[in-house]
Image (tube, rainbow over all chains, first blue to last red; front, side):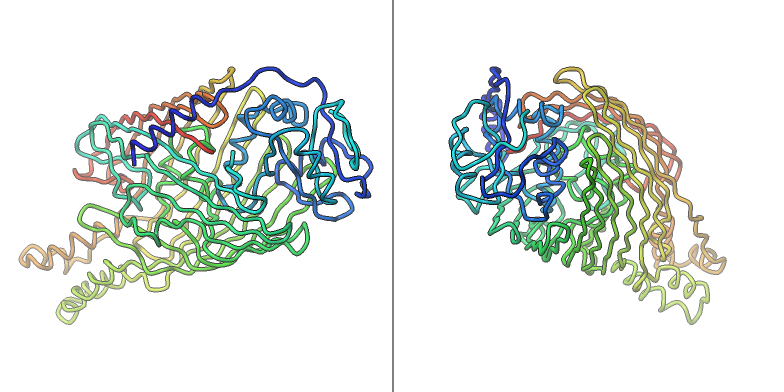
Amino acid sequence: MMKRILIFMMLMIGWSCSVAAADELWVIVNSKNPVSAMDKAEVSALYLGRYQAYRDGSFALPFDQLADGDVRETFYQLLTGKSEVYINAYWARILFTGRAMPPRQLENDSAVLDIVQKNPSAIGYVSAGTKLTGVKVVLRL
Amino acid sequence: MAVALSDTFSVNGFGTLGATKTDNDSMGFRENIATDNVTIGSWNLASRSLFGIQMNARWNPQWSSTLQLVQQQRVDNSVANSLQLASISYMPTPEWALRLGRLSPQVYMLTDTRNVGYGYLWTHPPMEFYGQLQTNYNDGVAVSYTRQFDDADMFRATLSGGRTGMQMSYPGYNFEADFGRAWALTLEYEDEAWQFRGSLSSVTNQNQWASLLRQSLDAYSVALPGAASVSDALNTDDSQLWFYSLGMGYNDSQWTLQSEVSRLNSENDITPDTIAGYLSIGRHIGKFTPYVMYSRIHTTSADYQLPADVSYYAQYDAQLNYLATKSLAFLNSQFDQDSVALGVRWDINSHLALKTQWDRKFISPDGNHLWWHIDSSNSSTEDIFTINLDFIF
């Protein structure tokens, strides 16, 4: 048991953080979504699991980018002013109570774009300048 | 975090590799009275070490389910007891949520995430506040209502009810109580930096060992009226414990604060009435967060005095003397201690934190019942050293 935990720890330490960061990020929703603009407070409520719906009351399904990637770190810094470390600790306190689940993490901008194009409830974020089809930008960070 | 297995399923986990040392060989330190995982003197590697795994399924925005297993050293490590969560959640609207199954108990701010060391600043939740808790899970139902305000502030009210698993452990005395009925009302308010929480909860408490003592005392009660009164005092049948608590947390890029106060009112004479509280202040400096904490628990119920006839005859009757001593141990199990702690958390990366903490505890005479007390009842000062590596994935 102890040995397995130790091996696991070593793997985790090797899990390094990258440093380069995107300058600007776009928060996107499906083009069929009636929402045309959102503010930071609304988006952060969705990504911190405080609330599960858009302002019109329909369910929102947020998607995240991969942990330890520069896009995710930048997103939370710009949105909440908090580090990824803080966000992970915050989610650890909620997730492990079984009360809510953090947004599913996708590999990159194109995976996020793909799912937001397909799902009318989805919300995601991508690097500014990503070529967009079937989605619209509701917030620029 | 999370290993996504598919669109629907994901797996998360948490764990701690920890070591604890005390400066005293006569009293055992432990985090709460439910555990026999005790540190007496030399470094104990099992004190905090645990591993938890959680499987999540999100079927659609309305329905989800969660299963969580935690392995650690404890009184009963059966699968049934390792199962911390097994719940189905249904959200008919974004405001309302209904959860059913094995849920985490809602007593204090950290009651439901005590096992997830990565989630809090310290190496362990303050003994003076969390040490008196015997509940570890709740089989039942929880309904919550969430309201979001325009500026991202959130208000949530949760009402939960069910049966709780309870444990208490002392040298030579280890029991898992009959499941007690439990309910809780929790109100929470959160904004970007602040978090407030108030709760009222109640658990039915039943002590099987006290019931056995009562049977033996009842045999004496014909000859000794005092024995009947001791037996009455030991009666825990259907008595309730009432917990009232207020908590607050603050976090910005520089400071992190957390404080809670609570009152426990017990309807039986075995669980003492207490007031407890703590205040922790930490300062973020890069990846390091040094912190200080003060915590205190105080018993407000009076000592129990044996009736004169029982004390008198106990001198001549070994069996009665044994019963009287055991009864007093139950009836005068008081919690009275203060603590200051200094520590530092180092966030190595966003999955892993290394923490170390030194606690100095000031324990009043007869107030040492949070401890695995091997020696008797002098006031004492104890130093505890802990070092933990906490992770999540």
